[in-house]
Image (cartoon, rainbow, N blue to C red):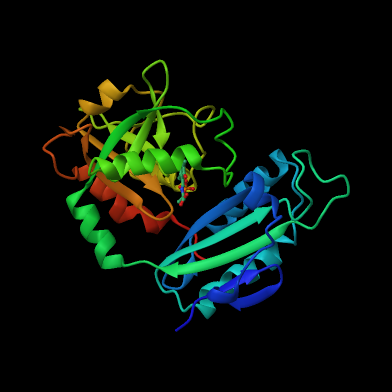
Length: 285
Ligand code: PDD
């Protein structure tokens, strides 16, 4: 079955789907994106993703290209046409097409919209979670506006590749004061010896993850203590447990940081429980 993408008003075969070479997303990374999980053919926590999308767009002064309800229809339609039962839907909106000039186009142009969806292997993901992943730490080298979910991801690409080169799956950024900010494509968490779950506040240095926000609801419901505070890479390496969160991985246990074993070197009970319980607290649409 050929894959279908939505591009600026049309559903196209992936091989025919294309954007203009003067799209500002292509030339300047002048755009934003969202990734939502698909479970049982439904979109997970769509309302929260759409709220973050609106915020990212408004921070960059890019117009919302269509009403949110229409965007939701398109996203569901792309999922349906690709027959994705479990996987992700990707939405990208850029400032649009204009003659190359760094400043915004003098006359506003129509923002470009691309939506794709693809299946992921649930059994494989579960298997990865059962084993846990390895993380390396890398110096924070991104711009300060990481709260905007921009498609400008070159430092993230390089950090992720550095992880792969060392046989790890994710890279955690460490700021000049030694504190972990977040992963190249996920939020970072640790569990203390006392069983508190710790993650950095979304006030600075991180993307306010939707999975992170939902997980906070899970923690409250399960009466697990949450500490929203910075933690150092040294504290993380000594933690009882560690895990990452993102729409595509939900709660993914971390078993080693910089080749140092976390806890017993296997996924911790709190991480696994949070992964297990997560979707009881998600909204499906
Ligand atoms: N990444 N931090 C960064 C830098 C991210 O790229 C992501 C998500 C997150 C977690 O956000 P959320 O829980 O809303 O997915 C945190 C997506 C999945 C990606 O780039 O593919």
